[in-house]
Image (cartoon, rainbow, N blue to C red; front, side, top):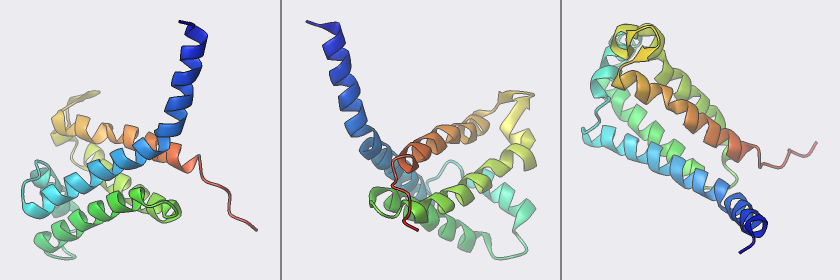
Length: 147
């Protein structure tokens, strides 16, 4: 077996599946985490509630916010599955990533045990960098808009 040929075939295979797999993965993560929130099973509920109390509690009830946040996550997941919605989902993802990163700064005692030593919640948030990388990979395959 020729290693160079095998290498080329693997690279070609990964190029073909990388964007569809990234889309599917982002769908699963966002939809799953959103539906867990909607059904009341999310392990992030307490952290989200604490963040909500220190930022948006004056605006609306937590239950309303949490339902809308769950639906927002599910929408992001669905949009990642649909080709042609990338320019819609990317700004939504940006908003989501900013809001989910807030506990690192606003609730650092809940996200770090010491400098650069994240709690489980902190690790959960930091892993979002991989989600951002997957989204960037999808966006990098878009065709530029026509003038």
